[in-house]
Image (cartoon, rainbow, N blue to C red; front, side, top):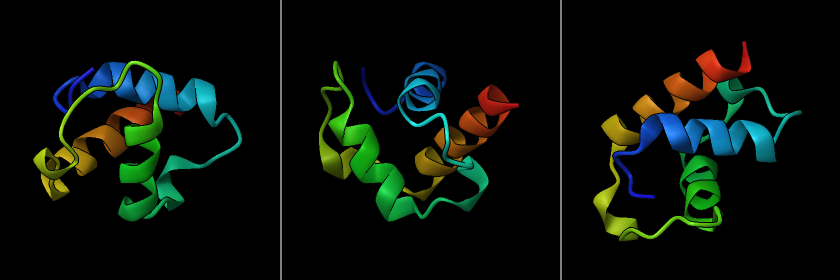
Length: 64
């Protein structure tokens, strides 16, 4: 997975953290959790606020 795989990342996060409300997460935590996902293989410096917002938005939709 790469940073641009926002939907897949959101699905993985939703499965891994079912009790977390994605509306309340900090981007520092989100960044770390994405980096720790099995199958994630991208440069930590390639993410930014827009990418993290997209992942968070997809996760919120996935959690609903």
